[in-house]
Length: 141
Image (cartoon, rainbow, N blue to C red; front, side, top):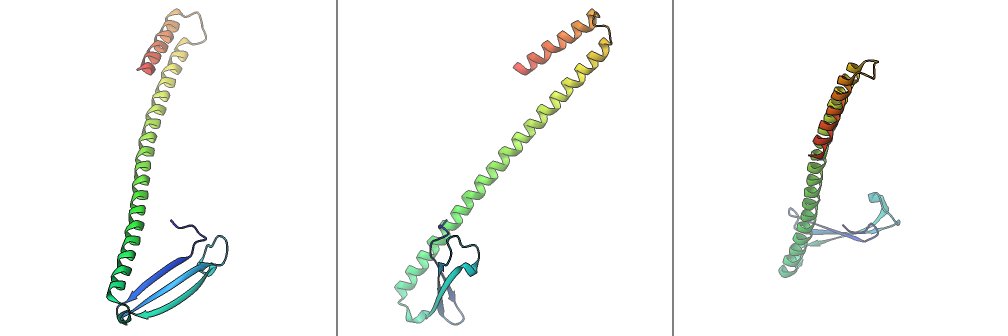
């Protein structure tokens, strides 16, 4: 990508009229945002007046610029696709973790409800300890 304060050169080949149109865009402001922020200088040249070797060189350079731009955009698209895949995988892991936590909370709530208001209920306290040990073992795996 070119810096925003850099001059831009654009060219187009008009097949119907056999001419090459070249425009040079020079920024008027420090950070141009729209086409009005550039000073445009344009000229036209008849293609038949340009030596064939120069035409070939112009087309070669234009092809290299287009290839470079397309390669850069393809690489950016690939990076975005990889980022999206990673984000999707992370979201699925977060959903699974959240569901596991919800299940643990529900089972612990059932045990606490089973205890009732009597904290001296030995069977319920042992069940609660056993469930806690199972949860810790599952988290260690």
